[in-house]
Amino acid sequence: MTITFTPTNNLALPPAWHRLTPIWQGGEEIIQQSLPHTQLAPAWQLMLLGDGSPTRHLELLTGEPVEVDVIDMSLIGMDLDAAPELIQAVPGPRLRRQVWLRTASGQRLAYATSWWEASHVDEYLQNRSLPIWASLARLRTELYRDVRGIYYGDSSALQSGFDVTGSFWGRHYLFWHHGQPLTLIYEVFSPYLTKYLGPMQLSTINTEA
Image (tube, rainbow, N blue to C red):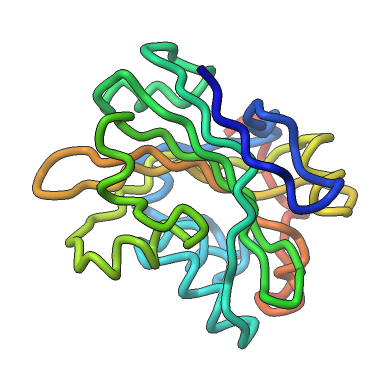
């Protein structure tokens, strides 16, 4: 069974999730050590490698509330869904949720896919039009954001969705709650954020890293 939400505009992605085709990627060791500033500018590192709320960061950067366009919510059962292998840490059967994060004025800032234990998703996402951070904050849920992977890569679907050309930075992480994995999240950020965070500085990126 697939529950598909009505798209809010004609740029919405179909109900299949979109991961980057990596030009470069790094794991936990790189995330802990950080990257050379010639490879990724400090402000971008705060956004990608920090354990704070990206929704809150986006609101502070843009000066606008961040709203959610839900693309789809699909029951995927025990399927691994071509997700990062950490999906196995989330108990099944699972539900996959896809959203755009955008400003109240309509500028898309990020794309996110998350995987939840289907039987518990209503408990944590009582208002599914809210960003995950806002939903969990309302519940006073104590969380730990455990960033596990970072990517620089391409996606034709996201180029269309963000209405930009070029490559993107993304990451995936686990949310932990009371010592248990709550959800796996995969996020990709729009190059539009260079307006606030400055250039990404990729001239010396090592694609063999």
